[in-house]
Structure formats: C-alpha cells, structure tokens
Length: 595
Ligand code: PEP
Ligand code: MG
Image 1: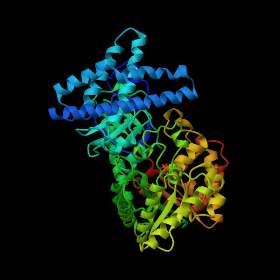
Image 2 (image 1 turned 135 degrees about the horizontal axis):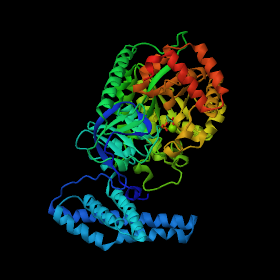
Image 3 (image 1 turned 180 degrees about the vertical axis):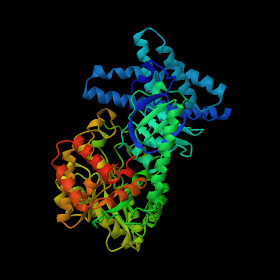
Image 4 (image 1 turned 180 degrees about the horizontal axis):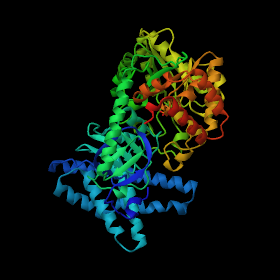
C-alpha cells in the first residue's frame, strides 16, 4: 500500500469541522482521538531486560526472513501474471529488508532503549522514510513508500496472532485509515468510546461487530486521518455517519438533546420485551438475534429476541494461536444453546474467508479476490479435519434440544449434499462411541450467492430452512465489494434485482413447506421491515440492539399493506425510489422510531 498519508499535505483543522462518512454503528461518542495509521501501526512499547536483547534480535531475523520470502513469492506471482519488468519493483523492497544500516540501528537502539524490537524497528524505519520524504529527489521520495511497505510487513510478521489489538491507555475515539476485525476484537473495549475509519462500509465485519457490541462507529470517511491529531476532541455520530472535529458548544448542546430523546424512546421500547412480533392484523414474524462473541449472549434475552437466528462461529477461530478443540467448541455451543432457550439457535458452520481471514487457517496466503475465493463451505469441504470437529461439537451440543445447523456461502447443491453427508457421518461416529445425539438435527442453508438464489427450488428440497445472507447477496448480485467505500453507492439492498431474489427465495421455500428468514443487516433496518414482511420473509435475525425497534415496527403495520407495498416495489425501477417511498411510509407509520 502506498504511503499516501506521507504524501498528503498535512493541515490540521483549527475550528469545528464535519466529515461525512457512512453510519457504521449507532450511538454518539465524544472524547480524545487515538490516531492510527496502517502505515504506522500502533505498536506496544514493551520494556525488555538486557538478557532479552538476543531473543528480540532472533525474532527480528525470523520476521525478516519471512518478509523476504513473501516478497519473493509476490514477485514470482507478478512475473508470471504480468511480466518480469513489472516484477522488478520488488527489488527495491528486498533492498529495504536487507538494509544493513537499519539492522545496525536496531541493534544499537535495543541496547540503549531496552524496549521490544517492534517499536525500535518501527521508529527507525519511520524516521528513515521521513528523511527521504524531506528530500527534493523524486526517486528518493518514492523509496519512502518502499520503506513503509516493508516496515508494515515486518511488523505484521513480528506480531503473533494472539498479539493483535490497539494499545489504548485512556478512553478514546479511534480514528484510523483502516481498523481490522482482528485488531478490533483484541482491543480493550472498556476504553474504546467509538471508532472512525477511512476504509470500510456498513457491511464490513468490524462495523457488524461494533453494532453487536454497541460501540458507535463511522466508516468510509474520506481523507480524515491527516486532519486530526492524537488527543484532539471529536464527536462521533454513528447514527448520521458524521465525525465532528473540535465540536463547538452549540453542537454539543444539540447532541445532548438528541441523546435525551433517544434515551426516552429506548425506555419505551424496553416495555416490549415480553410481547410477540405480530402485525396489527395478526401476521406472526419471528424476530431473533445474531451473535458473534460469548459476550453477546446475555443481550439476546435482554433484547426480547426469540432465540438466536445466526451464531457466527468463525469468531472463535480469529486471534488464536491454536484451534479450539471439540470439547471447547461443544461447551461454547452448549452455552449458546442454553442462552437461546426456550427458543432455538441456528449455529452457522465456519465462514472464514472474505474479510474474516483467520490467519490460523489461511496462513500468509493472499487471494486476489478473497470474497470470490476460499471461503465458508468451500474451505470447510477442503479442510475436513476442522469441519468434522465442528460438526461433531455441534451435534454433541444439540442434545440441548434447540439446535439447528446452517451452512454458509453455498453456491451449489452438491456442496449441501456433501455437508449433510459429513454431518450424518459425524453423528454416526458419535453414536458408535456411545455419545448421545438427537434423532434429527434441522439443517439449513444460507442463500447469499445468486446461483443459490436461482436454484432455491432445488436447495429447498434438501433442507429444513433458508436464511438469506443479504450482506453477501447484495454484494454478489450487484458485483460490488461490501468493504469498498468507493463503490458503496452501488451497494443497494433495495435494488429491484435484490428484491426479486428475496421474493423468489421466499416463494420457493414456501412451495417446499420450509421457512425463509433473513440474517443479513437488512433484517435490522426498520425502514425495510414492512417490505420484507410483504415479500414473504418469515424470520428476521439481527444484532440484538435492533430487536426492540423492529418489533415495534412490525406491531405498527398491517400485513395486507405490507403485501401491497412489496408488490409495488417489486415493480420499482430503482433502489432510491424504493428507499424514498419506504422512508415516507415509516415516518407516517412509526414516527417515534425514526431518529
Ligand atoms: C450475510 O452475508 O448477510 C451474513 C449474515 O453473513 P456474513 O455477514 O457473516 O457474511
Ligand atoms: Mg455472508
């Protein structure tokens, strides 16, 4: 990645300045900035003793060797796909890896400063890059980019999977060019007031996790990192997608009022916890919760959700140095199943890949199109060692009596048949070992790939339910990367193509007497609730924070008017037109919920 921040003009703001991004996770946070740049990651300055110096140098040597190997591999890939001349650009990177002055500097500073090798290496490479940037010579200025690139790789290689995370020493709002899911999960969240990133979209998993942990977030902000500095006061508005630098008194007052109002509405919504989600004319919809981490479990019943509609188990595999054992997994799945009672839980098998790369499984392998690559069920069917363990653990936990299992990223009927056969095999093995497993475990597939949506009639005959992963279905239908803020205007959940898919999937499910739910982010958007009901969706599963609002929206509408709305919008010609009309409908029908 080019050292874009180093090339920009740095001009810090002096008065209140607003940056519009994408609302990532609702809530408002005010506090000092902790600034992070991918090019200069926030490295922990761990003190060391003199007898640890040799060990630190060994760690650096291993990381440099690994970096060298990665560069050579990248060079070979580029040479075979584009050409040898283009691949020569990596020569400059190799020179940085082997640069003796950097190594001598590290040795000297380690002894002098007695801090971990990553902070010494980072300081030396950063100051070298800064010196190059200060020169007139264009060639040398470009070398600064090479130094940043190599330094970032080396620092990544120095960092073990368990050492991710941001060093956050006081309550702060993180402002970053990018914040990886791995880092977010490993950061001390008691001090994280909120985060704002240049990269990302509402559907990036860092934003999804922020919503489930109730951390306000704004993503997809353009060119903000160069305008802020550590400690600067900011107000982050995760509802409108605004980051306000140096907020004035009037702004703070207005936000205070807005928060009061939000609080009042939330108190009213609390009273709905025990009520059912039915329309005014008695059409029932199941409203359930999505969970990612064990710390989400208590929020499920607090929110009034009817069980867990999606448990994203891949989060068990991120930020670990080893694989969770069958015993560990069984215990966690059991706990999750108990959380969902008296309702059911849908445990989704590993959906590693895309932006949820667990280094533990995928290693250093970098795919050119991760979202079209080795992901979800594809990876599981190749890694039976992992998949069988997970299937056995889910089967064991299903003696709780309320467990369903679901396969992600299915694009072909054969994958479902194979996955079901492996589940049957795991169950047979367990029974042969004398481990109890219930007679039947309901299975479902996620419909999130256009080929699955188009063959919903075939898939429906194989399973007990469908759960539509709209985050991916929109991405693959519109051919728009769900993380790429540059094309986010094309990420259109209400595009006629998406709505037609949703209607078709529900219809095919019902023809085969199975139900169809949605567990993507569309399920928790109150503007869309009437439309989804009208399209025939039976279940909506969402971050538990959205449950009370969606319940209230369902209780405010008539089923017949939802059907009419769906019919009208299936014939609509654009996402914007549908969204405008749905917003108008929501303002009229449940104005209190629109803040
Ligand atoms: C989806 O794609 O809508 C979904 C729920 O799965 P994930 O966001 O984990 O890909
Ligand atoms: Mg998905």
